[in-house]
Image 1 (spheres, helix red, strand yellow):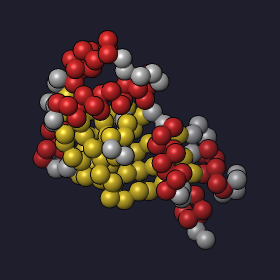
Image 2: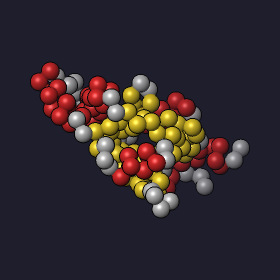
Image 3: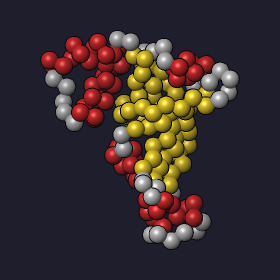
Image 4: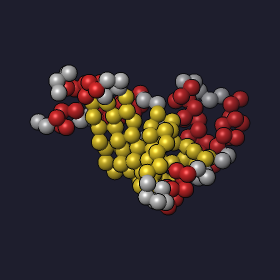
Length: 153
């Protein structure tokens, strides 16, 4: 078995890792062909990793021109603890106000660890007004978990 096969995460491990982490690096392709990389909070919408952002942001401009996106989530402070997941994907831009607000609620609940109350809904609506949601439709997953090597390199 190759080292690559040894450190690869199972589908369940990938899912668990994405659920426990908080920040995803999002790489889109700029007009000049250079990567444009930003760190974003994310949550799942209908089981699909997604994020919201301002409709006029550079990443959205890039995705409207070319929907290819690569996302990475990583963790670990030392080499033997490095873990990560790369999602090679196509982005779907969601502009429907109800869907954008639904995502906002999901993200809020994920990061604030509390339910959105009726009193918070006007704030959620205001936040959703200028935003869109980007769903990450994964075409290929690359993963690594150096902890599986048990300190042997």
